[in-house]
Amino acid sequence: MSRPGRDDAPDRLYTLTGGRSRSGDDSRFDLVTLVVAECDPVPGMQSEHAAILRLCDRPTAVVEIAAELRLPVSITRILLADLLAAGRISARHPRKAALPDPDILEQVLVGLRNL
Image (cartoon, rainbow, N blue to C red; front, side):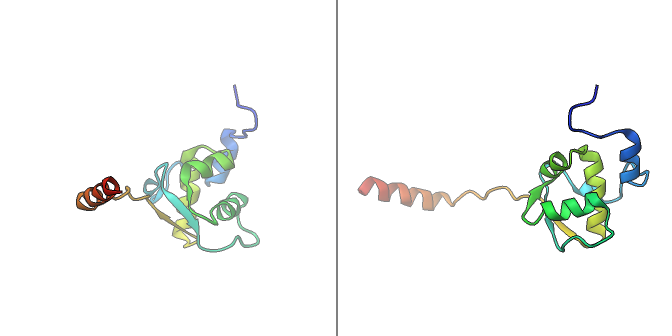
């Protein structure tokens, strides 16, 4: 049973990826990898590639891109790998938030208590 609004027929997905089920660089993209467009779409570009470039005018997670395109994450990762190889996007994993220095936190706490 297919979900409303999704067109993920196997022949369409096969066409989108040129028959590939994996790309050499798709392992670089996990669900939270942030993608940013490095250029605008150009005429003649595959419509999904163009859509990705438009979506990624600001850092956008792979899972958000897949949801917006209504494509499986595995297919989205292949399309992203194509764009990365062409230099049309950049990708980075969000860094874990750095915790403040405990000494600074203690000084803030002491300052708050003195108020």
